[in-house]
Length: 193
Image (tube, rainbow, N blue to C red; front, side):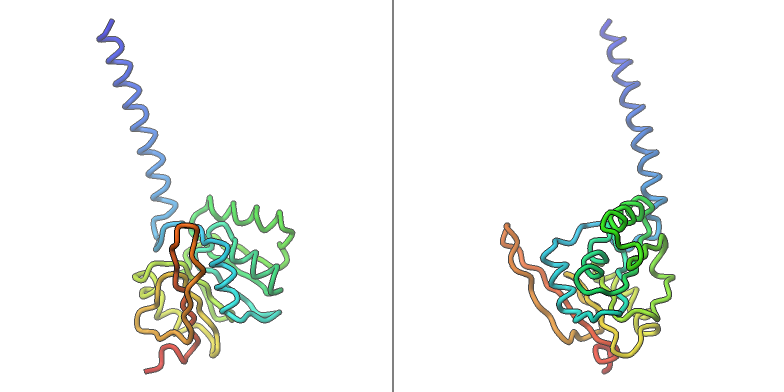
């Protein structure tokens, strides 16, 4: 009897391992080119990033790695801009599209399922980032090449190596007392030497 219980337990463990491996494989396939994990931006950080970007009605904001679309939605609602999000995760694209639809912003916000390293950013007035420093460094040549004069780049928590911010501010402390830095860059001022 004990041997039967052990065999069932072993079988269940093997099944769980197979399911986890399959799920992990899907996860990796969905994120094979990812440059940063999905971590939500706190609303106070979103508000501060958009305020620092000095958005004007009619401008276009690109959020690279837009996740659930919260930056895009806030920008469209509060600043009356066009917003484009690029997200590599199919699951997050669906979530962002659902959020945009529930806010009735389909005419202002567009979600693109793709790799932002292959995106045309030439229409962007503002680009928002919540990527790690290494990802920002990898993205930097494209930003320098494609962004138009006076475009702004706002990065939450991580600087862009080789660039000098035109402004840098800390968020209000979280309930745990943590502060985060938001970096504002402007083309080409921030990368002229």
